[in-house]
Image (cartoon, rainbow, N blue to C red; front, side, top):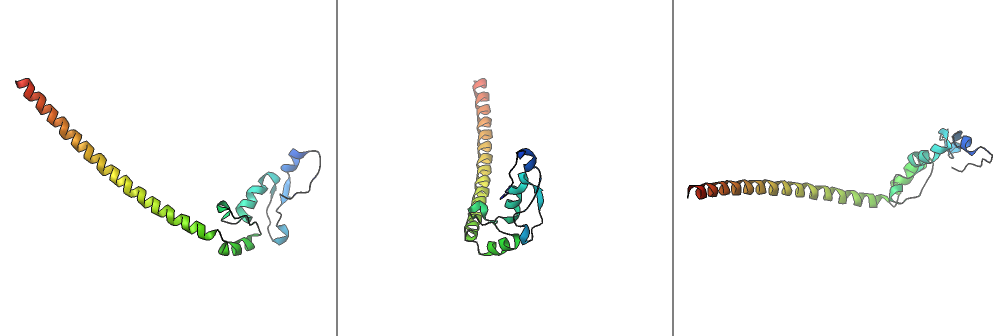
Length: 124
C-alpha cells in the first residue's frame, strides 16, 4: 500500500483509515489498509491485469491506457475462442441427446423383441 507507518500496534494500524496512494491525483478512497489491495485492483489496475498487464495508475490514466493496452488483442482472441468452444459444446450436447434418444429407442425395441421371444418359448 506504500504506507510508511512504523509503530507497535500493527493490528490497529491495518484497520485504521488510509487514503489511496493516488489521492493527490484525485482518488478520494479512504479505508482500512486491509482493503487497499482490493481498492487498487478494482479501481487502479488495468482491466487486462488478469491477462498479465501490470499497469497501475489513477482512474483517468487507466481508462486511457486500457484503450491501447497490448494485452487487449489477447483478450479479443480469447473471447473468439470462447465463443467457438461454446458453440462446439452446444453441438456436442445436441448430438449426445440425439444418441441418447436413439439408444433408448433401440433398447425399448430390443426389450419388446425379448418379450416376444419369451412368449414364443413359453408357448412351445
